[in-house]
Amino acid sequence: MPTVLFEVKENVAVITLNRPEKYNAFIRDMALLLQQHLDVCKKEKDIRAVYLTGAGKAFSAGQDLDEVVDPNGPRLPAILAEHYNPIVRMIRKLDKPVVAAVNGVAAGAGANIALCCDVVVAAASASFIQAFSKIGLIPDSGGTFFLPRLVGWQKASALMLTGEKVPAAEAERMGMIYKVFADEDFATASMQLAQTLAQMPTKGLAYTKQALNGAFQNHFEDQLHDEEVLQQRAGTTADFAEGVHAFLEKRAPRFRGE
Ligand code: LHQ
Figure 1: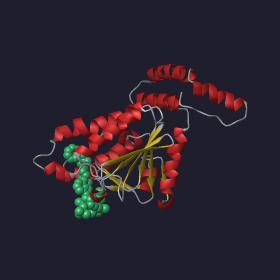
Figure 2: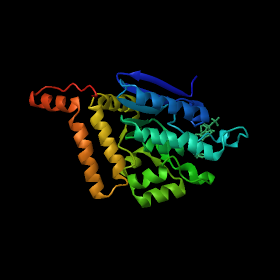
Figure 3: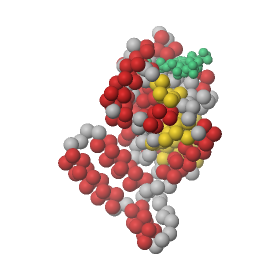
Figure 4: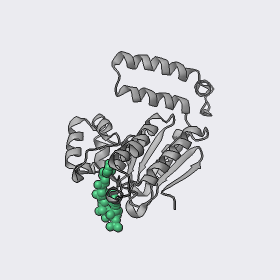
């Protein structure tokens, strides 16, 4: 079986990390395959949202630690430069929304890949662990960038130093993730969210994502400038025209992602 499964259903690319017996821990092959699939998501016009999840009990336990001690395995600098950093960059730069559907435990790089996604939802039984400190590493995959911005510096600092497990409900309360769904509703509710996003004005969502990317670094005036530029672009899309006409004609809009 491939280490990552990929299928497109109703404009949603479903990407499933697929090493369930290893809690979907990342090996090189899996990281490179995920990058290939994200590249398809970028190029394929019919894909208008991405749904990233894990097979079996876990979302992902992060780096496969067996690979780390394998003398023929990739070395630590390559693991970041060639595996995780490209994945996080691709998700942030993708001009389509990415839903992380965290079905079970998300640890180490697995947690931080989930947290860099645009909308993060979790099953009630899922959890998030900044597991790095427990093995003498520092948080990676963008975690030191995103987590303090999501939950504030103090919570991020404590979670990263202790490696404490955060249950999904607490992650929602502290603003780490968007929503928790009951385990029995999780698959349907999280997929419904991705399907809804896939039928929305895709370009407008892409420009929103770009504006949010900038919001983490920009000064106020730069951010207002970016909003002007991006709103101008959104205003020239066919979906904007359709959205306004549909509202005025009191009918449901038919967005085409153009
Ligand atoms: C695993 C793993 C795993 C291998 C579960 N590897 N087998 C960057 C730069 C360079 C190097 C290193 O890494 C990084 C980035 C990182 O991601 S560092 C952080 C790496 N991840 C971890 O340290 C997490 C390790 N895993 C755990 O702490 C636990 O497995 C969690 C809390 C995720 C789940 O605990 P349990 O629910 O008790 O499950 P389990 O421990 O029994 O795991 C289930 C199976 O999955 C088990 O295999 P087995 O054959 O015994 O059933 C584990 O060995 C395997 N597994 N994580 N990372």
